[in-house]
Amino acid sequence: MWTFLLPFAIAAASPVVVQQSPQQEVLGELEINGSSASKLHGRFLHITDIHLDPFYEPGTSPRKSCHRGKGAAGLLGAPGEGCDSPETLLNQTFDWIERNLRDEIDFIVWTGDSPRHDNDERHPRTEKQIEELNQAVVDKFLEVFGKKKDGGQYKPAIPIVPNIGNNDVMPHNIFEKGPNKWTRKLGKIWRPFIPEEQRHTFLQWGWFCTEVIPRKLAVVSLNTMYFYDSNAAVDGCASPSEPGYHHFEWLRVQLQLMRERGMKAILIGHVPPARSGKRRNWDESCWQKYTLWLHQYRDVVVGSMYGHMNLDHFIIQDSREVTIGEVPEEMPISRLDDDLNQTITVQSKFSYLSNLRKEWARLPSPPPGLKFGSNSEDLEGEKKKKKKKKKKKKNKKKQFLKKIGGPFAERYSVSLVSPSVLPRYYPTLRVFEYNITGLEHAVTWADSGPHVSMDSAWIQREADLSKKKPSGIPSPPSKSAPPGPAYSNQPLTLLNYVQYYANLTQIETGANQNDKPSAFEYDVEYHTHQDGIYHMRDLTMPSFFDLATRIAGNNPEVTYEHADVKKGKKKKKKKKKGSKDNKVWRAFLERAFVGFLNDDNLDGVE
Ligand SMILES: *[C@@H]1O[C@H](CO)[C@@H](O)[C@H](O)[C@H]1NC(C)=O
Ligand SMILES: *[C@@H]1O[C@H](CO)[C@@H](O)[C@H](O)[C@H]1NC(C)=O
Ligand SMILES: *[C@@H]1O[C@H](CO)[C@@H](O)[C@H](O)[C@H]1NC(C)=O
Ligand SMILES: *[C@@H]1O[C@H](CO)[C@@H](O)[C@H](O)[C@H]1NC(C)=O
Image (cartoon, rainbow, N blue to C red; front, side, top):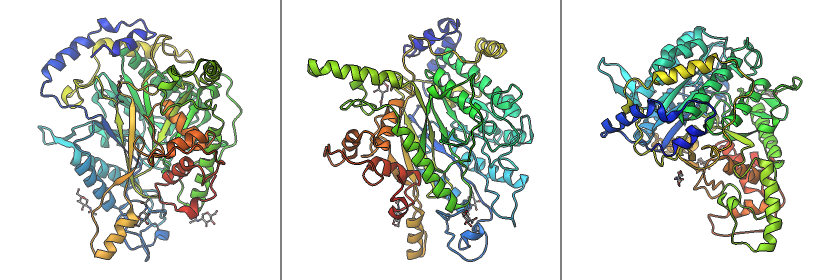
């Protein structure tokens, strides 16, 4: 099983020789003893933005935060309104997870914001309440995924990786350099989920990492509060006096160590690195480092996942926009926050999405006929074609590939944003599938015992790396290293995700008609691979590049081939770009709002 890891290890820039490390022996031993071991399922859950509200009352007015008055607040929430989530929705969601996912997933990434918003003057948030609401969600996780330890305490049966959201602290958005009150409070509440050897780091800074598949895959929980433009207590990532600066130095050490250990990493955060036109979520200096780090560690990072915006979409970072050393003047900004004013929010979200589309329209266009992403084998050898045509085509192909950073589009990286459990539109959950070829016998987190810690040789290496003076730009993968899992399908590559949603309109109508709630279910909204419109081969960068260009509508041929896969037709008509004409853009737009907005809302959004 080491056969696939060794090329990466040898390729590592560092002099550490993995073959001689004690790691292998320990692993071998674990494997022999682990015959009754649990197996990986190749699936994990992303859950985000629960926003539990103990004051929620069904039948009250959404204009009064669903706390009072008479109105349309439903049993399970008030989709499309500014209310938070009732406990019933939390309970039903975890019941559904227990029935449908509990025994099917390997780990959970949980990207923050479990407590309610500060949306009612009569019930201002308190520190105690924020802690209790976070604890309530921890209790739910342990109820469904907990195993009783000898002492009667619960411990999770699979790794659950929490992350700090801007509403997990008080006042919201404000997070001081640690250690602080909130690293202590959350460190205590999330204790079952933070590995022993990472507790010190969490208390100090509010970030940590967990080896969700020991010695193979880690989830890095970033503290995006240090990057967040709305956090007035910090100032970006450029100055060594800022926690954001230390965050990227720590991340550099972790990713370097993982490269040397032949490991891969998933990055998670609450506030996504949204940046479009003049609008952005993160301080520019943090975005710059993030984009550069993702590029330099493109052999290590499997993917990155965020919440916060309650808007299903993805973000493409272009490494050629990195200007570290020549950071541009502060640009005027308007924030992309999800505030509670729906009138403003929906309009500003339309313009944000339209802007993304405009940017994607400027991505280099593949030459006609080149199937990219959805079928990128074609890139490596189109041998069957006639010779004359071939040469011209080959040149165009070559130019195109040069522009995008080679056949794996390594110039770019992608960040995924999942919508929320909070029914800002409809409540959602996202389940990823990843490639476990060759990991059939991997030791799972559950079987690896109470300590998943590194052996002393690697701990020493980590310490050495941390002591080294930062050289500015992290080292790239070695020239001979194969493309990473975010670029080419291999073990740990994300293959697809299923977006689940609960149609509360339908569920609540059923409840009214029969005078009892119809069974609460999350249904499939779309499946990135099986879906007739997205039809993504996998979740690698080439696949996202392909999807982005189809959304932008600058390659209508490709669009139509994909759009009609389901019907078995292949229309090759060239159509005008436009909201109604481009099915992929329209699907992207509908899905951004979890199918909640109707044609009247969406027509004309271009
Ligand atoms: C939710 O579940 C908990 C037990 O996990 C229970 O104590 C509580 O009453 C339930 N709340 C509602 C509103 O059903
Ligand atoms: C939302 O913003 C609009 C436009 O500024 C304003 O007219 C409206 O009163 C606001 N609504 C609420 C609930 O604050
Ligand atoms: C997983 O990766 C291997 C290459 O290492 C590939 O052969 C296999 O098809 C991939 N599995 C899936 C389900 O895509
Ligand atoms: C939700 O349910 C309502 C009522 O049944 C239906 O009209 C609507 O199309 C559904 N929306 C989605 C996205 O499923």
